[in-house]
Length: 452
Image (cartoon, rainbow, N blue to C red; front, side):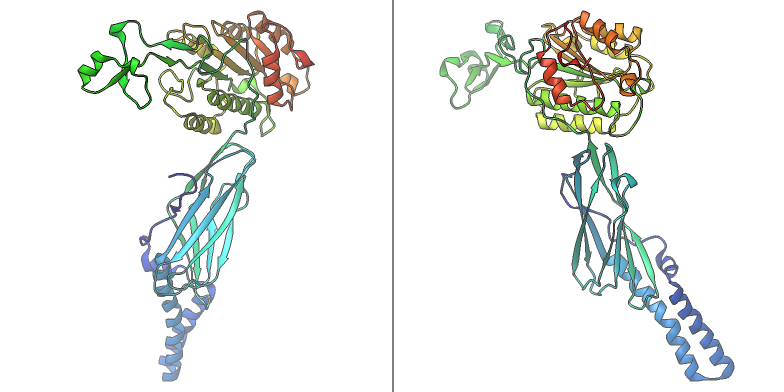
C-alpha cells in the first residue's frame, strides 16, 4: 500500500471473549450498582417489600444494559490509520491521521483513542472524542519523529468506550498496524569527477556497439520518427512487421559503495556517532550516483550486497527512484556486524568477471567508508584498488573521533600509494565538503585542507 493510503486498523469481527469479556469491563461504579441491586433484591425477599425489589432490579439491570449496548457498539465502530509519508529521513516528521466511524444505528458514548507507538517516536498519543452519532465519523492526527533510523511499527489502534453513566468501560484493540521507515539523512552532492571518472552513461567510451556484423543485429520494432535507413529488411520479413536496427546502446558505468559495518571498527552510538556518519555518507553517495545514471550496489564487510539484482548492481531497466528506495530501506536497518576483517568484501569484489572492479573496461568506481584499520586490514583495503577507474576511501578512525592519538595518517599514506583517493573524516565533518575535496584531490597525493 502506497504512502498516504488509508489502511484499516481492524475489522468488525467479534472478540473471542463475548459477553463474558464485556462483563469484565464493569467499572467500580458499575459493580457497585450491580451489587446494590442484588442486595436490594435479597432484602426485599427477606422483608417482603415489593417496592424494594423494583429498586433492586433497576440497579442491577442498568449496568447489565450498558454492558449489552457497549458490547454491540464496540463491534460497530470502524477505525483506520493513514501514515504520510511512510519513509522519512532521520530527524524529519511524519503525520499519522486516525479516523473512527460509527457504522451502527446507535450513538456511542465517549470514546478514547490510543495508538501504540515505540518510545523513540515520542509519547503514546491519546484522544478523547465526544459521542458519535449513527454514521458519524471523527478524524484526529498526530506527528511522529525519530533521530534514529530504523523500521518502527505503529499500532495496533486501541479504542476505549464508556457509557454516559460511567458504569462500563470496554477496550477494543484493532489488529493491523503500519510501519514507519526512518532512513538515513542524505546530503546533496556536487557533480565532481573522481579520478577521471565519466558520467554514468559514459562519455566517449561509455557506449558499446550492439552490432558485430549482419548476423548479430539486435532489431526492435519500428517507432514513429525512426530513420527509414535503419530498417532491417531481413528481420522485417521474418517477423512480419517493420523492424529497425538497434545499432548502439548506452552502457552504464558501475559503482560499488563499500560500507564497513564491523562493530570493532567503531566506537560510540547515537545520531552523531561515526558509524551513523558512515551510513549517511553511503546513502548520499548511492543516491547521487543513481541520479547520474550509474548502476550501483551496496556492499558490506561481510561480502553481501544489500541491494540490487544479479551481481548486486541495480539493473538498467530499474528506475533510479525505485532503486534508491530499496537501498534506503536496507540502510534504514543496517547494523554492526560481528566480522573481524574485510576479507569477505575483498573476495566479493574479486568475484565474477571483474564486476566488482568495474568490469573488463576498468572504468568502475569504488567508494569505501571504513572504520578502524589495523596493518593487515590496511593492506587488504589497498588491494581492493584493483582495476577500478577510481577508488575513494573515507576513513573514520575511532581514536581520532575520541580525541586520542591516531595512526590514521599512516593508513592514508598506504592507501594513497596504491592509487586510492583517501580522506580522513574528523568529527562533525560535512560530507558534501569531503566529496568535493575528493573530486579535487589528484590520485596518490595528500588531501588539501588538512583533513588528514
